[in-house]
Image (cartoon, rainbow, N blue to C red; front, side, top):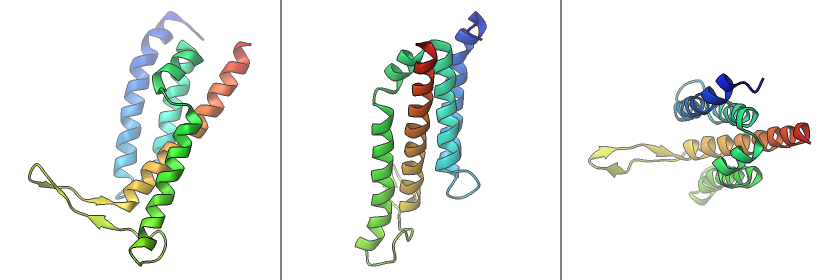
Length: 139
């Protein structure tokens, strides 16, 4: 399935899927979606890119090792829960701040931090599995 058309369209399709995964991630704490499904979409995009261009191209594109990405996401998710304990409320209670950036009030929450952490855990874990399977297939 490694045709010229597939190799040509794969980077564009990957970019669109990654952009859509960020959209799903960012709307997930208010509407259906979130870190898990956004992470699956992003991992699928990287798998498509790996099939088209090879495992080495994916590893160069993501810069960090996939399990390091998972570890960073796990740390973020844990910090989201521990922040609530630090403020004297039950574990995993959502906390909100409203900083003003360029005159616009931007709501930020520990819920979003947790969603981003889940997103990174899923992207790292699934990408690691997909790359391992693709490497085995090449050998």
